[in-house]
Image 1 (cartoon, helix red, strand yellow):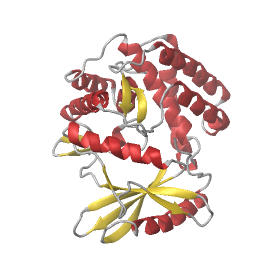
Image 2 (cartoon, rainbow, N blue to C red; image 1 turned 30 degrees about the vertical axis):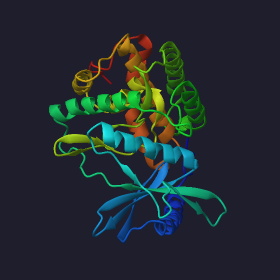
Image 3 (cartoon, helix red, strand yellow; image 1 turned 90 degrees about the vertical axis):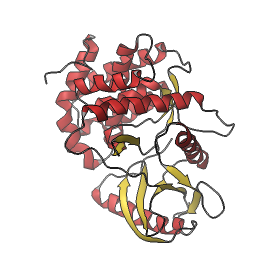
Length: 333
């Protein structure tokens, strides 16, 4: 999928943002948009800017690093389908003056990149903690997305990444190079053992349309906002092909055990989980946790936070390796 922006220092981060703002201003010339304000939003797999207008509302401009046009276009095609099917507003792509979903920008260094403009989804993150009703509805939302995925008809030029064995092995290779930023050698050995067990489960589960298809791929709590009491998914930049349990794992990882149960109950009110789903879900939860650390290990802004999380992460991994259920049970650190 994407290659991360290289952000080895705070100064490099500032330089990237300055450069990307220039790219953003060039990209905006390709849209029929009477914008009034542009402000930096976030730098990760993409660099994003919030675009304010007085008449047309708010938009999100994304500058993509290392991603092919076909991948971005395919994401927007799926979002159009979800907007029609699930009864929940999701980000919607805006075509440029030529009717294209993406804009190619040739940078000064000779490297091309692509930009896409999305309509802003209204809503806010839950403040003061999630209510039981909100958490239950997150499960319903996941089920709706997965059912729509099952019914989605792929086009010949539809291209999105695959989240599974190969992507996980690639993430572990990346972590091997950078783990010493927040892990000891002994701690990393536990990660490696857990990764092998995860790979065993990935190869054990069949890829039928009841448990595998297009997934959001990053639907953690920061990518869920609430409007009029209902959850809305945002940031589909990592959407691709994977197991539905992998998607659920992203949502429940940051929740308490009792909250995780509510997500499952909400999900099963619309779509039943079948087979030996609990140990598989625990495996995907460990997979997601490790992938998160693989992703953030490269970013110096994240190092201290990663170190602080390790006592709990190590506790989860130890329970997982011993075969002790942990998803719906409290863990002592």
